[in-house]
Image 1: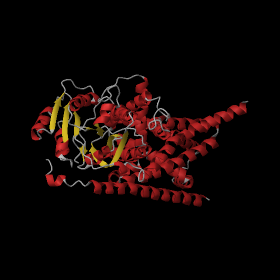
Image 2: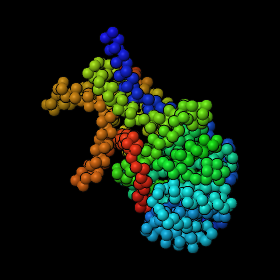
Image 3: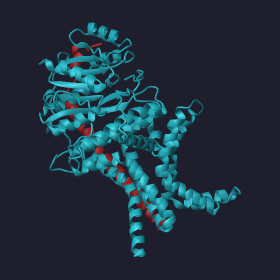
Image 4: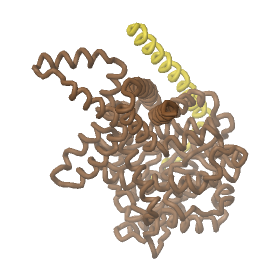
Length: 497
Length: 50
């Protein structure tokens, strides 16, 4: 009886540890679909199509960036009579109204300034104000929803619009690239992250025929599609763009990612800025996961969103902190229960980690060499310095077992048994511990005396664990029913385009 | 800031499509190359371990 219980406990602990490999396996599967996108894509169904497009730009205190954005939109390589810009001024208190009025005069009949008297309700409300005006007229055939700070490359709209030649396509999104100049370390981390999360992941989603999210800064909708979902953007959540994406697909239309349409955006350059932005996104994802609970893994309910692969991709990202904590807790308990087993599982988990890391990092660099040149160091350091050391150890144990031990002995401080076991426990706990360090980095950044330490802490713990820490905070906030507050990301016009 | 009409004619749908298809197909070969290198590295590691 006792023997049976022990075996059952060891099996549970082994499963807990190997749960840490689930997101890795899913990532390898997702990245392996990128090559398939070379053959299976939407290019066979595109046409030379330039629908009359209304661009809706929600703007709240965007005086620093809005003039450049409008000018860039007016210089898009797109038929002049097929393009109108509607700046929806969300009761700005800075110079935004004056700048918009100037632009309205500069581009008569092509740029329109719409003013909300009551603002601050969030982007979705602002967009709905603009949509009501645009859809009340017959003029537009397509609606492009963007952010006030993004810079569209000249051919990006043409590249997106050609997909709407296929009437089964409801919406198209572009590849948003981090374009801050000068770029701080956080901008470079985000730049690399966007290769993996957009250029790579969304190509894989194109292959599956199910899109997780049309980027809020660049989503082109056909008029029919937008009207089919009620002509409005969901205002009940913090992830209005993901809800729009899901609703579009639930109505039976495709959502397409156009990876060759490039849009530059300014992203946060501090941990606090990133935390604010991503907490909103992560809480939105919790809300989406809950609202569509009857769709996940149920192809009979929804052929696209209910697919197994799509569900796996969504939930491995969504539950990443749980997998990391599970692996660490399993390893630490096994350390005391069955050390040899814990050691084998630890090695196996980190060898899988090493192969995944190499595959994803190198492939990401080849997908977007331009960003890779800018952010190669952050790409390499994405899992963090400690994780890299563990990866190297798991692939080349003698390097440490002989090399480091020899070096320490030579230095007159040979590693004691206690030192070795504390180090092992530290390595076992690191997957969960890295998130704690990320929290520490956020706390350090908000204290004047420790601010300089925070970038170093992120390089040590990794950008991936930082995102996991934010996701975990989102679970807690949603579980507590925290207030849904629209915290706007500050923009300063650092994207030069 | 608007482009002159001549510049607006630059868009060539067919040429852009050919170019973008080439970019996507290249990803297939890039992925194959990365996988081949990874397999070679793993094989080397196993060989040396043995």
